[in-house]
Image (cartoon, rainbow, N blue to C red; front, side):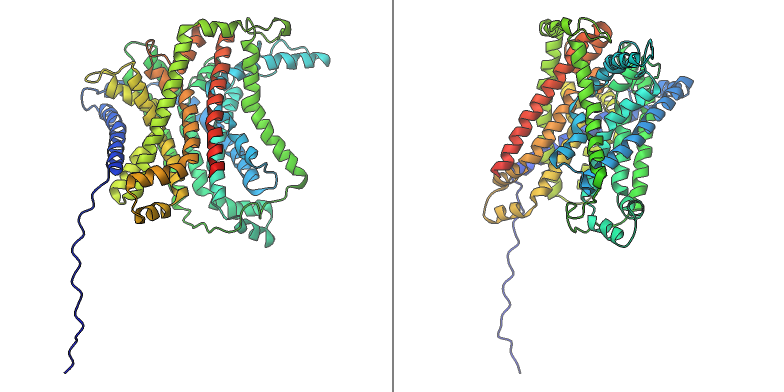
Length: 576
């Protein structure tokens, strides 16, 4: 008989339930408030669309949707946005391929060139091109007519006409290309270049490799690019206002804003009716993206870097680089030069009288209390709201990284909802939910601040998530094993290492908030002016040179803040 003398070890006592630390309680609370600020206004708006509750606007919505004028606006919007998006996607894809796959790249400068237009407020760029290419008074047109006169060509106006369908689409392309480039470039960075090189080594040409290898693998990035460009295209208000309205090309965003700002009380039902068409367009693009993702199940395996597998362009290298420099000239240098020239004149004219340049328009801005109030309010709101948005993005990222499951996925989807809608829809939902009783926040800074944070918290979350995953969970786990608390880990490990990515995200969010026109024009008031509101007021009441001076001032202030912040980021990278 065999007796087992080895006794079983006593069972370990059950571990005490884990107690949430203060940082995670704060992060959870902030995430819950953010979700509420998104769901509540959009929910009230949806209920009103379906005729439920005191906000019911179903009758007016039906009247607007059955109007022939509405469908003319929709057709104009589809033409401008679709053509502009297609051309922007083509240009963005070419620039992304040049910078990620060829020897024509110029390092950091090449990656920044296609993104430079994002740091120039869209309304400043649009006004700059009006001053350059207006048929009669455009500065560039004046110079071209002078050159034509040397060859016996007499022209009364033109040859360029920004007030036309080609001019409007041209402006859309310049505005949308950076967004297409950013998405496609990210897709190429995650695609192993060795696959394309293997295709070329097997005898396939560059075109065949692009069609059979690169393009199918880029379907997710292309789908995301389509969604981003269309969403930004149907949301932009400044370009069609400044260029489309004088050309008698009316589009949905301009009409929606006019319904809310050119009548008292605002025509909320009519604006919501037109906004439904905007949501339908974005929803259609979202379905296209989903289908492209479903048809493209593949895994990306890291191989050699793109620098080792770069395509040699030979003599075409400088052609590619020149194309990127030309894009920078068209999107940033020329419109800013047009603004500067007009701002230094007493009146807008195609002929620049170099001996009569003056700073009187800038003195007018200094002496105008409304202008300074708008600029000051925009800067303060942008600094505060960009900081709040980035803080919210970090806290939401920490919560989503710690918690898994259906609830976390739902929260993640809700936080990103504002990025799939247009600013018009979000601004309208805030007016419906908070402008009237019981909150009565119409025309207040609090309403503007809440809307800014909700509008741009998706972008902040994108940057915070990327910065968090760049650090990885290993350092946090090592900190926990060494006995550090959650708050200490976040404060001493995560935030310092995430700082460069968070600073870059803050810079972009700051620029977008400073140059916001759509939400600002609908939510601001005479007692709470911001730059967007002031620009629209000056567009109708003040002279063009004064408006140009304000555009120059906006660009300089935004660029100075961004350069200062990016310098701080570079110093942090050096320290690391």
